[in-house]
Length: 339
Image (cartoon, rainbow, N blue to C red; front, side):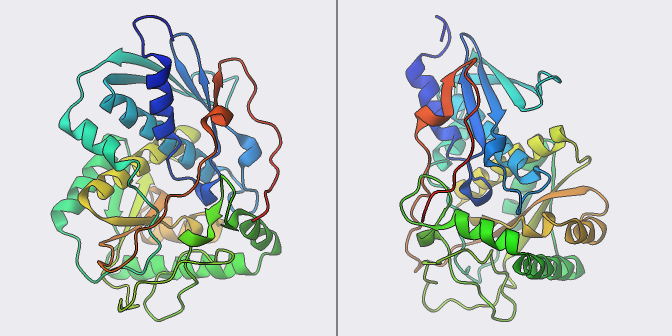
């Protein structure tokens, strides 16, 4: 970049942190472009999941999470980000233009960025320890700072949410196109994207369990001696006042803020977007859980079991595939890779 702005090593370091963001099926549907004085985020529609994410909401959440990871990374590296979201109405996939200004990192900046390489989508069966109310309040504050609403689903609302999760899973299980897509994007062993077999457990059908998706070739063994009862697991629902592209992008940023804060507190988290990918179950969550605001993300949150093996990091594409000079086109057609 131009003199007075971050050098290329700093930019590469920040983008390397940004692309550690979670994304639906680890599809990594983003592209970054480096200008002389700015950095630009684009949605990569070639990586949109037609069966899982027909309206592109998960894609936008994923890109928003990457944008917040970038902001956190730059802040810790000494640069404040000034973000212009959706800067060009004629180019809807141009999601953000980022200007950079010198900045003195705070303790919170460093803690948030330090959580990025440590964060994992944790699909282990969780422990029975309760999450302190102060932790939940901090997570809600971090979501509010990004323009979103984060509330725990409790009592009847929690029951209704669990029912919606199970109904969505049953609907998807009956959809051949969805099953084919999920099989193509999971059970991975050597690919730079998709859900690795080592990070996915077998479906948990025991009473009270809130099970993740039925990924292909699951290879994650549950920690021994952990109860299947999931009653202590906090189900947090993140919602927005609107459901337009801007709201979804900001909800992705809020998701990142919540996940990184939870990681810094030592909590285990796992996104559960499946009930929000179908119109019927999403409507149920909106009417019965979020009180009319638009649900964007469900986060399963609790303490990890103390005897669980550390989760391996999920793979990422090479930085050269996602960070290029401004003016270069977004990546070409998607090709599924073998497991």
